[in-house]
Length: 255
Length: 331
Image 1 (cartoon, each protein chain N blue to C red):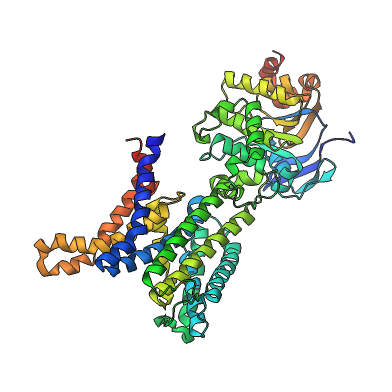
Image 2: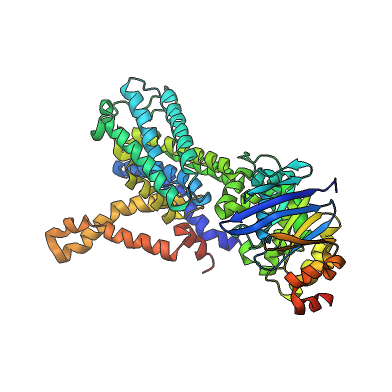
């Protein structure tokens, strides 16, 4: 695909003897929801960390919107429109929910060397923040301290913050992790709604959610891409079944 | 809601009123010692307020903040010794030199975190301390007497104790106002975000280093102003201005009064210095019936009382005195 929004070529990362990313090739087309799955230790988070610039790759290239971003620092990538949600909730717990999102808006509203005006009364920060909260279904929680939210709400807040910067692409790192069945269902609905307007790279453990949402799926095992394609193809792929899904899990996927 | 704000607001309003009326009391009673003490309190409150900007709001635990007291003080003292007594020269020089020092110290120390940051700020402060000791021309270890306070022409005569007191009071209020504007601005949100979760700030697109550095420079500059005031107040400068225990005192003021609260450092400065003055007297009075003439000696150990007091605040009142007052609203 020539017009991929995100293109990963030969991405490689080693930690001592462990190869966490082994020549990963991956394209994400604009508007696509591309899921990356794989068992624990497959290198999914390592992949995300390299995409966001928190880990430098040992080899390979990352292209975003036609630009080589392999060596760009995190904040520059974010400014280009690559937004990330964290697997382990990483919020500003002592600030209010709205402050959390407003900071994400502010990050994309030019430099912040503005020392005088009350940031909490600036509508150009607060309004988009409220809108993002609303999309994530958290508008009722805006004025609470982020620390007082439930785990599921923290995940929603993560999404709201990722949305706040009007990103061109969302990198979602296991948004379902640790959610109960009800919360998971709500998150799937939320992602389904977002999918129509955003390009998403979804790293997820929850098979049901992945097969329900993804346009294409890439399967990672020990840092290597063993299969990539539409959900139907992946479901039938013999190697995927053997290496990743396992015999009994393969049945579960068919449900 | 209204009842909630009240305990703390009333206390702060009362404290500000007392501070505003203190010179009147001093004039009526002739108790000028009290005014000298409180001038000192106001100046150190400015320094503590500036420290709170980086420590309380920014989470940068600088253990060398007194270095700017020293730099501001020495700027005034050295210029005075060289015959330049105009405050219009001395004070801007004090501010600019403090800002430059903070820029260099910050650029080096903000690359470290946690304990390393504490140690490197302490190390830099000690470096300046020993540089000051080495300044033989300006008194070295013994310090330097300033024979003429900063001159401001007809604008204000700071040799007049009352005028100087009100200048310090106004500058303290100005500093608090400035910090209030800063911490609620976009810049302040970045600083508080970096305190809360620096990694996340990078992830959402903030290069936090430059913001923290500018914050560090603002705090250093404001503390340099306190240094210029302090030199004029004591008519004397010495390396002791920036001894590490002085940096410790400033941290105690901030923590005691309440980190990340606007008036906390002021409350802490008042509390610490008033305790410093009254505890020895109190202990002396309490000890007198038991140990007789040795009571004066007992009074020298007033810190035995101050230490546990401070410990209690750290352990049981994280928000300091300000937090206790805010908590009282629910009681």
